[in-house]
Length: 257
Image (cartoon, rainbow, N blue to C red; front, side, top):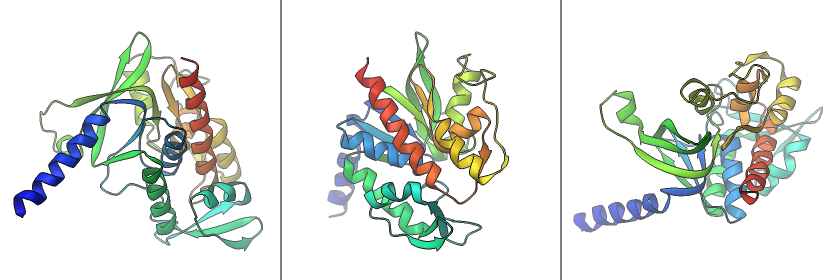
């Protein structure tokens, strides 16, 4: 029985990994915008995989505000929350609360059941860059990267790559710093996140969601960090709207190829 259990895990995992060596969309970071984008694109028939560095997907959702595991939406995000069967409570003044654990679980479940694959404990250590276009990611196990072991990675090719890495915007930085790409920002570089301003941050999260160079898109707090938007703390409507927006942009870009 022990051998059968181990064999089942190995066979099933490597079937899944082999299927994802070539993708329509590689999503880096399993935060709210990345999971929503993966859900929408998979529902539309795209071949999507999400690569999450941590053991638990969900990004910054789990802790709510200062480990009070509640978070806030405004009315404009309620339709997307409903799509994932997330329950909300009217808190007045146009704000709605939701249980952070329920939100994280619902988004993960929704993305996987839409057809996206989620690979946890996998770090993206580089991008694939050919002929002026980002066309894949370079992956390794997170423990290998954290221990700085000299172990070569594997490559995943993709028609589009989404940087959903949150505040660090790690993939955009690799495009700018290593590939020398001029990004679609006022400076052509990653501009960095500004201080807290909830209303501006919510709006700019969606506004800054876009393709920043051929093949590379940004969403959520990665979008704000790239274009110099404000942060907004445990309010998540902008993240939800950003994920839905970027899924549409990526689908349009893939259709236009």
